[in-house]
Each structure stands twice: as C-alpha cells, then as structure tokens.
Image (cartoon, rainbow, N blue to C red; front, side):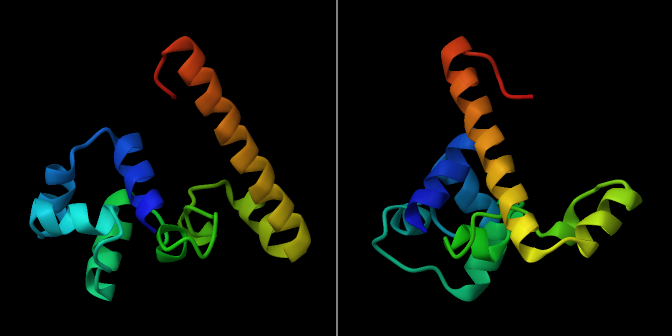
Length: 116
C-alpha cells in the first residue's frame, strides 16, 4: 500500500502535509503510512480512498481498478454493455485501460506536458 500512497500523492501533486491535513492526521503519521512504518486504520484507509478518488481495493493493492464501475460517468448504453459482458472481457478491458494510462504517463514524461 505504501507505493500506492506515494504514487497517488505524486500524481495529485500534493505534499505529505496536504494529504495529512485532508485526512485529519499529523504529517508524521501520514509519512509513516507512506513509508510502511505504520498501518493505517480502516477509517484512515477510507479517508485516503475518498481523498484520492480510488477504491479501497486499489489503495490496498488488492486490485488495479482505480474506480468502481458504478462510479464511472459513462453513457447509459456503455454501462449496459459493460453489465452484459463477461468477467473475462471486463478484466481485459481494465488491462487495456491500464496500458493506455501507462502509455500516457510515458508520453507525458517524454514531453514534460501535463496529462489531460
């Protein structure tokens, strides 16, 4: 989970202190979470997931799916199609989306531009 916390914080371009303030802990406590020196409580994990806009499973590395499908703002026909497709196809779709994200991140690093 530590690597996810750091990754999400850096992507959001905020300091440890800013995250700590947002989730109502000290900067030192948050630093311990990010460095693996202390495990956050379930309440803190929920606050972190809300702050970063990700699922608890993503935050705790149980999944690579950042956002729950029901939280995505997709057209109704796309949501219907997702509900009707197989779990295998959904898994492949998530892998492809992760691939696209990585591709965008590499492109951003090369050009120095912000990801849109």
